[in-house]
Length: 295
Image (tube, rainbow, N blue to C red):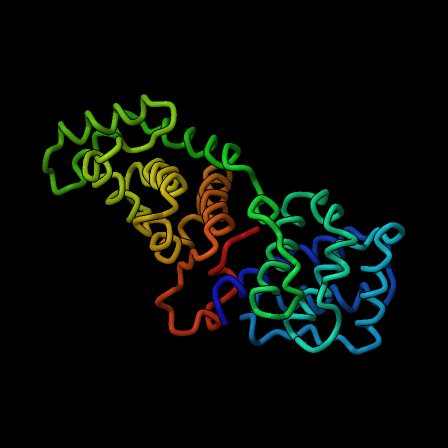
């Protein structure tokens, strides 16, 4: 099972839980689905089964088909997609739903929209859905790039004088003055993008510091790394490697820092359709759910 398929399933489960928890309905169907989804959220994906009966699947499908009158339409859509991933021969190929409800999907709150659209995209790519179901990159993106970059720039530019000095020494004390000057000049720019053709100053020390969560300036350097990874489509696989190595460190950051950093990684995942931080993982499905991107 691929990283992107796993991430899609996890996100659909999270969104389905959110919609069921805030539902005004208290039917046995909602209670049963919510219990199953909540029980599964911390498990490894292949160990989890929604296990809808045929009758339940039909009832969920009726809710999807009743978009104009059923307030649980979006949550039901997530559940129907999850069932399609689990039972590839059952249910809808979403050709009709795509034509009828794409406007509804696009008008959903951003996390719900992105989860559904990525689910539809992965479903088509795994031959589970109609080839005519084709969400755009913007459909699959939770936040526009400027809303992702702005908090990252704030983290980068908040690096203190002391942190900048420490960062400049990170290359075993080599070329400290040159690294410090380049770093300060970078942080004075509007976008914090490395100068064209510059592959060392200050990129080398920034990337070295972003390798260690205990390093002074770790957060600011991670923000600079992400800004540049977004700008160059993670050409150097810097974001790829760092998510794999430091994902738990990002989760333990202060809320504002955590949100900005994790949003940066999610944006890269949503925009770069072949981005895969577990490309060298023998079996990514063996990873626990918290190894994947938060929603």
